[in-house]
Length: 298
Image 1 (cartoon, one colour):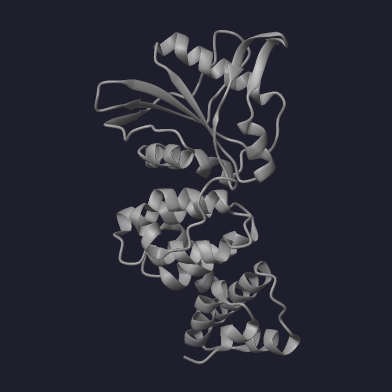
Image 2 (cartoon, helix red, strand yellow; image 1 turned 90 degrees about the horizontal axis):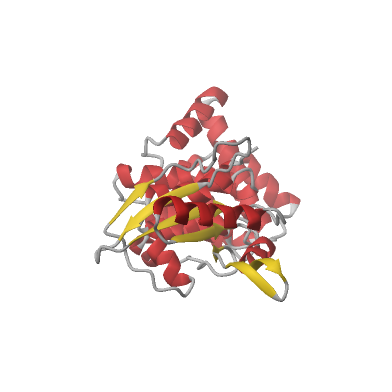
C-alpha cells in the first residue's frame, strides 16, 4: 500500500515543477529553471498484462526551446527489482515521446538513497548494454534548513528538505524553522506546504510535532490539517484537548532530542492547564538543550 510520505515525496514536484532545478543544483547537476512544465500521464502500461506506472512524470520546457521528461520516483526501501523497472520507464519514454528522459529518486532513508545512487547495468558484465544513473535526493545530500531566512527564500525546497529529513535527530528544529517561515505567507501558498509536510512525515513521531506547530504557529490558517486539528480539539473539549496536545508535543520534542525529562518536570508539563504557558514551552522545546531551557523565564 502506498504511504502518505511516498505520495508527498513525488507530488511536491507536481505542485512546484521549478523545484527540480533547485534540487539539481544541490545534487551538482546544472539544470536551468523551466519556462513551463506539464504533468504527463503516469501509466506506462503497454497492451499486455504487465502494468507499469511511474510516480510522477513531468514534461519540462526550457526557455531555449529544449524539452525533457522528468520521471520522479519515491523510494522507501531497497528493491532489487526496481532498477529494471526504471530502465523500462526511461526507454519507453524515450521511444514514445522522442524526448530525453531523466530520473529523480527521492528517499527518506540514507541507506536506500546510497543504494539508489549507484549505477545499475543490464547485460554481460564485460559488455553492459544499458547503464542507469539516477539523480537521488535524500537525507545524505539534501540541506538541513534551520535558518528561517533561508527557508523563506525557497519554501518548496525547504519542504522537500524537511520531508527527506523526517527521521533526522534535528527534525524538531527543521519543522520549527519551516512553520516560522510560513508566518505572514498568504494561505494559498502556505496551505499546500502545510499539507505536503504532514503527508510527507507519515506516521513518524515528527508528524505529531508538525501538527502541534501548525496548531500554535499557524492556527489562523484554514488548511484541511488545521481544520482537522480544530475538530479534534472540539471533540475532546476545547481547553482540555488543546492542553493535552501541547503537552504531548513538548514531550515528543524533548524525546526526539534525547533530553531526559525527570518525573517532576513531566508532571509540570502534563499538569499545566495554561494554554499560553504551554505554547511558550512548545516553541522553546525544538531548540532546548535541557528540560530547564523549556521552563526558562523570559
